[in-house]
Image 1: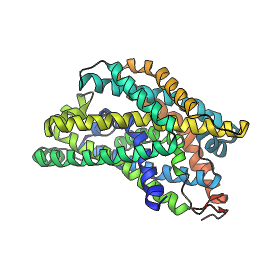
Image 2: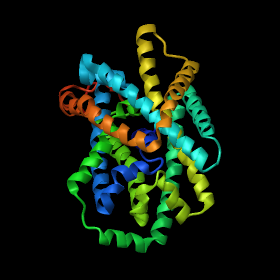
Image 3: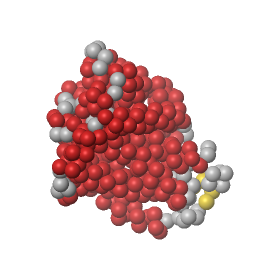
Image 4: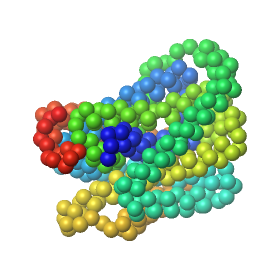
Length: 377
């Protein structure tokens, strides 16, 4: 596998795919934690999020590389020792909530755009999740790369249309609003970032092919930058309709309907639908990696592809009931709870124990040609 694919494309695509469904899909998440702070405050929040993404991704990739801890159970055994199970309890709840957000979002898309029952969206998502998890990690990673490339093209075109059509409105909004409350903007950015990055250990499998500390850093920067670009794009587009945009449940639909064509909206909805499903795929792949590694240790073999598909289906169906709570409530309550929980179980240990172990312990892993190495470099 070439340098670009294993160090840049795959980590960036996997992380954005997992982030997108729970953090960008409807645009409501951007409104709640970025755009509500105003045009300038939103940019401060986005900068805070980007820096947090990059630092945490780098630390996680490097810690996993040095200890060959490529599933969240192994990762937290390094980080928390016997307390590793605390993350598993929290991430189980987080997985259920995130899958519920994805189910709610796909249901809303099916109902509002295609005019069909919300259950149709749920079934379509179920089929995508089960099929990709059945075929395994390589197919999951490739599908994420293609989906992210398609998203990039669509978002770039959307920005081109919005900036070209509403340039006067954008200039007016940014000129009329003074610099925002920096403290509040940083705070909401951290709440958002701490929730999203708390799921990094779930997708640490995408760092299996990193062979040096430099590659961990490049992968962290690439994934962090790529993951924040949709947020920047949506926030800037939303400012053309500020402050009315703040009251919409699915604000991305407004800007697309106003600035582009119905055909573009159809393309966008299909790509977003797939990316929302890929959020579930990526998180469940993290669970399957953890189960497979444990099964390999205890029984000498991993689960079958069929069992992978059945576990994925069960998890998605079990979480779907939460979708009835409502999308906005799920987002607000979920983000605030997990930002606090992840701080104590993940971030504080990572910035203390994790950094200490990265500095003091040699990396034991494989180089690109398959030879073992114990170098700190």
